[in-house]
Image: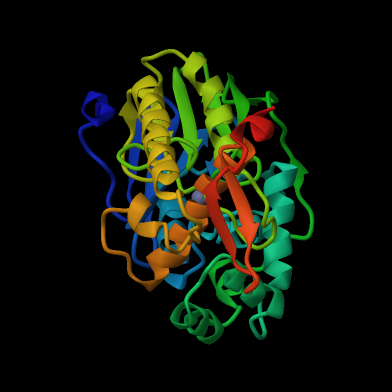
Length: 353
Ligand SMILES: [Zn+2]
């Protein structure tokens, strides 16, 4: 069953790079480019407040995007300042210009603790040679020698280049907290799995959910296992945390960070559950004999993967394997070579009990 057809895009338009489109009274959609392959653009949002504007996410760190923001600030703020920047999560397309925006408007960055501290950690770790523990982790999860060489050559400065100097302090928002913006209550709804403590914002009176990367139309949010938490089970967290979005009204207008503003939240969440259930079922069928996450890629992905895709795909494959280790359906075995392989649990009964 494919529920993608049941998603509608009621605006019938989208802004171009650096352009602004009004979504509903007081809420504006700004689009910015992303300077790498895979995702073409990111959606940022501006919410009008009484004495200023709340900005949701900042875009990737680049001079071009700073220039586009400067034009937006000059033309679209009705003479009012940006008074608050909320970043949904730490990924560079969302938090990349947070430090610059906070400097420009002399404001404090607002985020959840999990997202701010994770982003700040990666920012401070970034730079210099690729650390040994990253190479070791990549070997453990089955990277080929070609992939390892690409990691070594790629260096360890990606995050520092993609993210403008991050503030050393922040203002915390938490799950269920209510922020009043322009006379309307916006509820913080924390989602998990795509990142640590992803903040979405729901406004009941407007019927609007700013969903960041937690709920995206046309694609499933990336859910992966990475070196900082090698035994993580993010797919379990993702599937659990989307349940609470299912209780929002069906006609909620969803403002995602990628692709277009849409209606069809429930159908999209059903699609995610079905998509992952189908991938998990494929994995179980393929793990009659022990396999590394890398060896399982053709089972999970139909399309041809380039080198960058392969790394993300291994992280995603691991997330699916760890989900099934969590339910007791797969065992993770460590070979003499130190590499993790996954196979159908030898004693499923014992594991489930
Ligand atoms: Zn993201």
